[in-house]
Amino acid sequence: MNASAPARDARGFSLVDVMSACAVAAILAGLAVPSWQDSLRKSRRVDAVQALTRLQAAQERYRDDHGGYADSLDALRLPERSEAGYYTLALQREAAGRYLARATPASGGPQHADQDCAALTLAVDSGFAQTGPTRRCWNR
Image 1 (cartoon, rainbow, N blue to C red):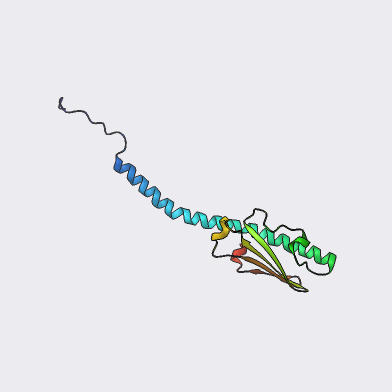
Image 2: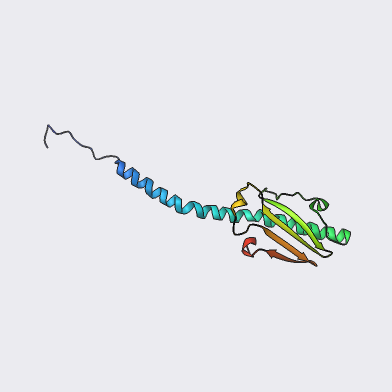
């Protein structure tokens, strides 16, 4: 060993090592975050499904008591927003034995970006329910 040359320790990480690790982490995050957000949106749809299911049950109770379906959410004593607040509910009575309930994402809320299931619907005709827009939106 040459006494005049300084000793070099090969411990630690170089700047290239750190930058390479950061680049790999950024690429992995770029791939994972959109998938995570999509899964989160799908799980929040449960809020709409539960709200529409509660609305359907309330309509059936109302029909038992009054002989027909209610015209408004107020008549059913239901709020205009879902329990978690991700969706706004609307009720439209179409005929004596039919109504359409709709859950749309609350404006400015996290579900507003849900393009696949922009609005979940529940159409009931003579006690028979049809869900929309697709079964996938209802997690079935």
